[in-house]
Image (tube, rainbow, N blue to C red; front, side):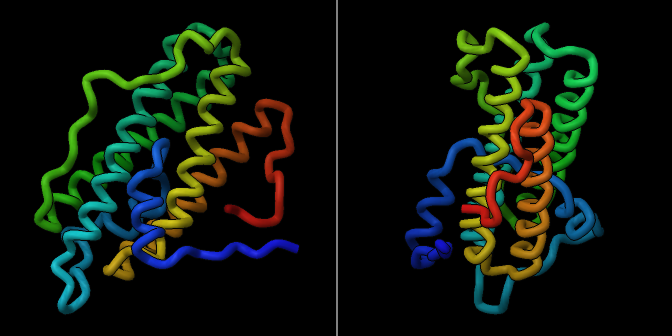
Length: 189
């Protein structure tokens, strides 16, 4: 049996902030959709949380663009296209919420890049598009797993943990669509 060993907080933060392919989803909407974002812990200026949220926002914007690439590829059959557009809708909601939360915490939300370096030339079939999306979602799961303990604001950590669950569901559904085992192991890493 193997156990997940978390790196020290500084190393975990560097790992999270350097992780590409992070995608947000789900319950952050429920947690943060109130009139005000949760206040930072006493003595915490919230800058670290804003940085983590902005990193997630950047990845969310990247996911929106990636799902757009897949949708416009003409490679997806109707039911799979509907799934991709649905997941893209989740990411759009999350991006809007993250941007609002960053602003409420006193930060400046990052903007979408003018161009992303996607492997468009390797997407030649529906399965290729699904594998690309599944890899992004898997990266999101790993990134959130590392990010949850890094938040100074525990309410944001709870939201990130819930988002992690939603990303895991996206990944499982995409694996299922590929004909792969939706849950490949008992532990996430």
